[in-house]
Image (cartoon, rainbow, N blue to C red; front, side):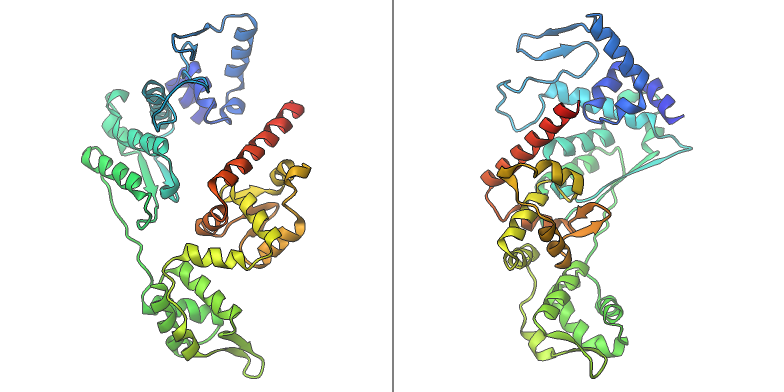
Length: 362
């Protein structure tokens, strides 16, 4: 029923165009792509070039050639961007209704580029052209987004949110997630150390001041105390013990990225290089993808030993054959430990190896 709704709202050319951004459409609508292949074989694709050398396909998005001269910061020219926005608006319109409302959750919005934020703004505010049911449709979709408000790049996010607010089209609700209070911090530490809250109260009061009650900061700070033997398990007392005076002298965590970067620097160089390579894939990556991209002699930076050590140090988490950074700040620290030129080289290598594998597999 969902696929039928998409076909009713989007023309075949629109589905083909969106498949460039949503590859799974090819498997969801095989009949449409089978017709496209037949049309291409018959020479009836109606392709030509416009005056600027961009390839044009009737009814589809006009994607620019890579050598098109464009000095703007946008990935797509305005005419192409408008087509993309329109198709995504139609798609959202197709898969949501009062009987089956939809929620779209966007985590870590501070990582989003300008094009993604423009698309988000368009999806929420530009709905008047969708017909008489536009007002009703807006009530069928709920967007939930999270972002770190203390990030310097958040000017783009704030501009996006303000544009949505000022449009008077949708209601915007802010939920500020501040640090935990005294009771919450103490409950977290009491649960971790398996001790009554009355015993952990002095420790939790200090930890809260050092971390501002941020749950992730608390977790990192407690791990640091354990590594530095300020917090250790006593076999004699059969419980965790600590020196409150030593903990008082520890610095307050103000820049977690710096703390994580320092932790990375204490790891062997081979492990640091492996983590930087893994970070270029984003928050998580499957083992098979790592093997594809590191099977050449020029980039033999990943070994099982490196990955095992990273997991033991809790820099990475492993679920099945997928490796994941526990927090995007850890991924950021690993990614930014080398120069931008070096990361560009790594990204280029990764893309080339995946392309070569795809060509030979096809």
